[in-house]
Image 1 (cartoon, rainbow, N blue to C red):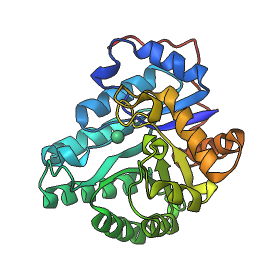
Image 2 (tube, rainbow, N blue to C red):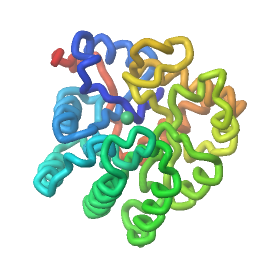
Image 3 (cartoon, protein in one colour):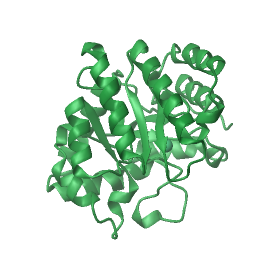
Image 4 (cartoon, protein in one colour):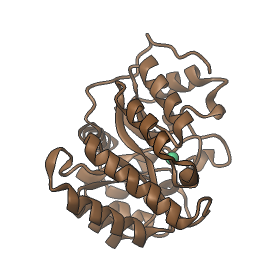
Length: 275
Ligand SMILES: [Zn+2]
């Protein structure tokens, strides 16, 4: 059994065949999918998907690309949304200095505001970090320092599609973060990632697709989907020199503890409407 801890099931790329995508995920052994919002509208769609299917849980938040759209009013709407059943996290939030679609100071303010909100909610955070390692780590350190333990202790969130170095992973894990691995671990030209996978302890790893983006190796250039999390898990198991069963049991337990969801399992009974 596997959990895809990061998917964007609400996106239009899945409109034509969402039910078939979920059926394939079930067949591949994916019990639960965390579908992640990137702005208010997609967060709403994520929550709707979670309410329609037992095997889907949602995360709500504003991506750093859209940081300049975040207003106090929107934060109020997100807050209301986060009270809905099936919302397990705040995200994805963070900093993206690669695309710089919002000014960096605006990104940092939006990140800060959403971290503070997650702390009040007592929900873990899903972090997007691209070429912003130092600032992300510094802000997470400050945030973690102000939390003073509490409900989030040891499970502050996840650095999704981890792209930092091992030193960063170690500092984040010491704060109480998990490390999320996705398609890039399967790429033959991945240089740093295999060593990081080997060094990160099994009890701090979660697997994800980030679909429809970042398809794993045999599907590169095509749409990614939750069933392919199996390929990520197989590669992580191979790198760690353990069985697939051991890897999947550990990462599933990690994801359930991190996001505190009961056994929300994809089943054949709840079919999604195409939207
Ligand atoms: Zn994402």
